[in-house]
Every structure is written in structure tokens, then in C-alpha cells.
Image (cartoon, rainbow, N blue to C red):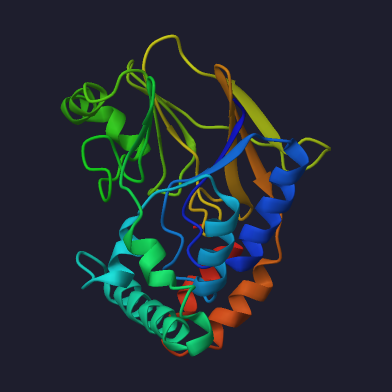
Length: 257
């Protein structure tokens, strides 16, 4: 089965559309979304609808949960964005013509974990599926890594940090080096024979110094990390025009940070 795995869209409609257009050209069997469809970005409702309509699997992310309930553990800017996002979802759902199209109901019914054989899919980590970060520097925290690796059979696919790459039991972190020019803006990496955690990166808010949207394609025992150009300047201007969204949330898109 050939799967496209996306995560951390964060209300960035321009990035999501560009990634879905690229996925359509890859002829995948299914699209899996690992959460955080909303939060930070200016088009939460449109992104929820697209993900709902296009993805075979959608998991709950911490920002999705924050938009439904009282946000917990967010910084001031993120919390302000979450509350604005909630207002947009509520405004959509209150409209009579959307009585059968309740976006909050869709988000509220999302699972936190999905397992298929020896594959596990989460937003954060196998230990805390909703909100645990596993950063590249955690390879220097062997106790944390050992505890997490014990919790799944072979491969765990996750998002949340917005940093793509593969964690091995060595421990090591393999970061994809995707060319910025040329016909193939992707890198194929072989999955290790042993266990691995695979972060698919972020569609809507990359934080690895690359402004291009990121997702991966899982096929057999390899993954292809793909980087997709999109008009982030449009998203940035939208954010700047909304008082409840910090300008930094738009500015950071230009640098992938």
C-alpha cells in the first residue's frame, strides 16, 4: 500500500492545496493526516473541509483539541490564535446552511492513535500521542528514547515538531537532504531493519530552515520526503490582516522556522 502522510497543516490553505496537488501526481492509495489541521493559520475551516474530504485517516492534534476545549500549554501567541480559530469554527457551524456540516463535530470525533499491523500512527509520540515532542536532540536522552521505542512494534509515524527525519534505535536522527533545484525535490530513505520513528515534517509551518511544505510517501520499506513550493507570501499577508494572529506566524513561513 502506497500512503501519503501529511501533518501540521495549521490552517495554511495555500500549502495544503499545493501538497494535495503534488500527492495527486504520485498516485497513492491513501492519504493519512497526523493532526494539527488548524491553529496558527488563517484558513482553519477550509483546511478542515479539505482534509476531511481527501484523507482516509485523520488523527487529532494538540491544536485541534485546543480549538475544541480550553487550550492548555500554549504560549500567548499560540493561545490567541487557537481562540481565534475556535471562533471561526463556531461561526461556520452556527450558519443554518452548515447544520449538516459541523466542523467541530468532525474534529471532536478524531482518534488519537491508529495502528495497522506493526505500523503506528500518532501526532506526538507513541508514549503521549497528542502532545509529546520528540526532537532530533532527544537522541542524547537515551532513557526517553528507550521508553518510547518500547511502546510500538516496528515503525511509528508522527508529526508535531515540524522537523522531518528518521529516528533509529542507535540512537540517531537521519535528516533528509531534499534538493532545492532540479526535477526531483525529494529524497528517498530506506527504513532500518529494526524499529524507527519517522517524522513526516509539516505541510503548513516547516521549522527546519526550509520554507517549502513537507510530507512523505510510505511505500514498502522506504519513505520519500517531498518538499513542495507554495505561495507563502499569500498566507503571510492573510495572517498580517487578522488582528488576532501574531504577525510572526506569517513572517516565520518565509524562513521555515
